[in-house]
Every structure is written in C-alpha cells, then in structure tokens.
Figure 1: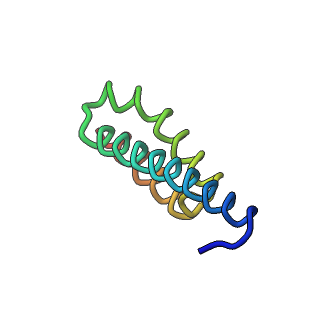
Figure 2: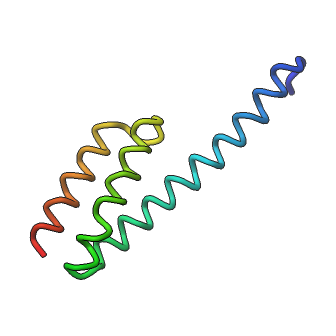
Length: 82
C-alpha cells in the first residue's frame, strides 16, 4: 500500500479518472451501435454527435487516434451507403 500522502491522492485521482474514462468510452460505444442500427434520417442526425464523441475520446487518449480515424471512416461509409 502507498506510504505517502501524495501517493494516496494519486490513487484516488486515478480511480476517479478511470471511472470517468470507462463511462465515456461505454457511452460512445453505445452511440456507435445505435447509429449502425438506425435508418437513414436518424443516422444522419446522430452522425455529427457520434463523431464528436469519438474525437473527444481520441483527444483525451482514451482511444488511439488511429482507432478513432478508422471508426469515423467506417461510420461515414455506413451512413453514405444507407
């Protein structure tokens, strides 16, 4: 276990950040699933917000930037094909 005050604080901060990142990642995954299942009109409406969510995850290093680019590319193709 940690021996210093700062180490205990780091543990608390890390746990809070881990939970926040987990929540944001799961929310984005659910939004992506919803977009893939949506019809044309709904998909076009959802697309900008989902792309924004993906960009935010990549900016905060929750997901890798290449993964974000791949997801956006696949979703763009999917929406265009509807």
